[in-house]
Length: 69
Image 1: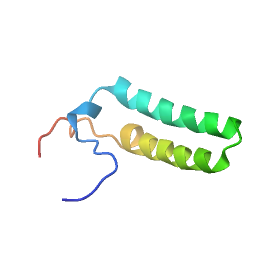
Image 2 (image 1 turned 90 degrees about the vertical axis):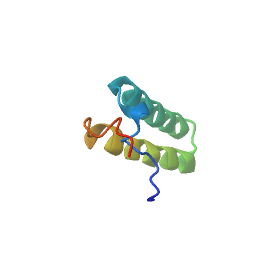
Image 3 (image 1 turned 135 degrees about the vertical axis):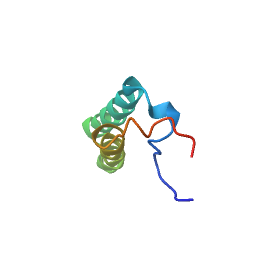
């Protein structure tokens, strides 16, 4: 079993709107952290948002979502 932070093959991530909301919330929270002067938290949450964007939007395979491996 391989550890992954986000498993895009899980059925929860199948709807596009859920994936978009996750990305928007994480990147939005990073913007809030930067705006309030919290550079460290802004970088951490921004990196998480970038990872979510990569895994859930850019490289998402709709055929793999919903499979029960």
